[in-house]
Length: 113
Image (cartoon, rainbow, N blue to C red; front, side, top):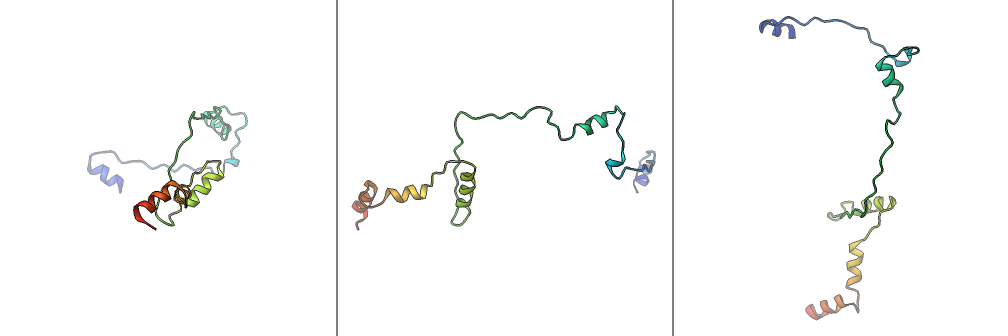
């Protein structure tokens, strides 16, 4: 036990005291008491200071990357649901090499049809 180890090290044994505890806070009547515990209990759930909302001058730019079927679209959908603006680079890239675009013509020039 801890006391055996303390005695071996020339320390006084620890005394054990049993203190009954309260099972429910509702059993305690804080009426007419001015203790620090009562004051803290009374303030539970109250905001001490109003929350500060700082808005940034520039928006965050978040890049979402990952392998196939890693959840990129799901994450983007959640961000979009929170009013984020989404630029789907896959869609933009596909637009870039549609027939009659400059990129498409360069691909045909380099690799043929």
